[in-house]
Length: 434
Image 1 (spheres, rainbow, N blue to C red):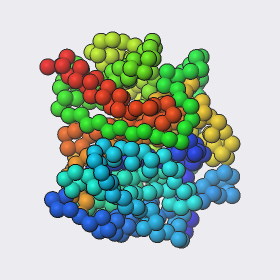
Image 2: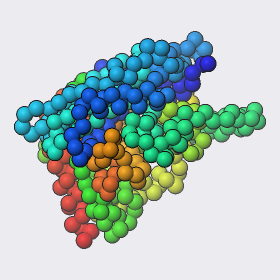
Image 3: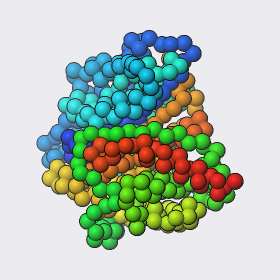
Image 4: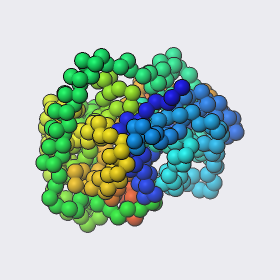
């Protein structure tokens, strides 16, 4: 039985892969068991569960027709244990060492000749806690779909089977008439997106967050109280995501100042938007995006939030299938052979459109466990675009906002200064909200 065809966007993520720009997402998931669980048991359970997740058994195989395309096929040599490692941290400050340990692991590209994922169990954290490190290639799934994959590795919940079935569901083909109407509609949308991208491309060549390509990474983890974010939203309006973007905008302003960079103009962020449930089709990635000007040049934190609210409201009014931020939509409609020829070069020009990627990964309001150990913290990690200094991902779980910071090691000597800037920016905005 032939495997599922990769969409143009899925192929684009494969084509963007490089030694200095690996295109895998990541997550650091921390569990707190009542009693210490042997690492060998954790690894065995992971392997058993991974073997039952169809997407984790597949690798990409190029096709003759369509030219330059690819299909997901079952790996005949699949062995889940080959994808899972166990490490123990030693010495003082082991909790602090988790970020540097994960950074060395996350910077290693995945082997695309095998199913493109890895997991690592890290023990030795305080209080008997352990961490599960995950990385999944972006061609395999997007951020919103990653939970459906990861759910198969955790203790089963009533919703688990539903999520996994939805992830594997292939939509019914459209009728010939509907297909023609769809192609006509898409053609108009494509012209609109391409025109918007040309208008949005900036004449100045250097992004304020530009960086030389580097294979090294630095990671930082920040946890904010969800009640603080909601307090900011309740007083100043907007959404939780608007409030979080305002916090991150203030953090980037402070961090740039600490680095001796003048925040003389906005920093433009690409905000990924899930199109799941909007007829996104069989693609592993069902994404669009918004471009949002983060007003780092504005001194007052409330004014920054007001500006972000206005920008995001305008994006939402236009919809996820319009505007320059809908780059993933356009990429999904470009033939695979074009991506094979041009995507790597186009990726080098990302700075002409945006300076950083900020994504908010949706998590369900469920109590998640592994072998009975409660999940306490989860820090997502977004791939770092070519020539970008930093990428930011956030997830809300158990009343806290967990933020994963991934930085270019050649451009950022100390990720701690950015982590501290996030905490100070959140405190500054919260003080204006009570």
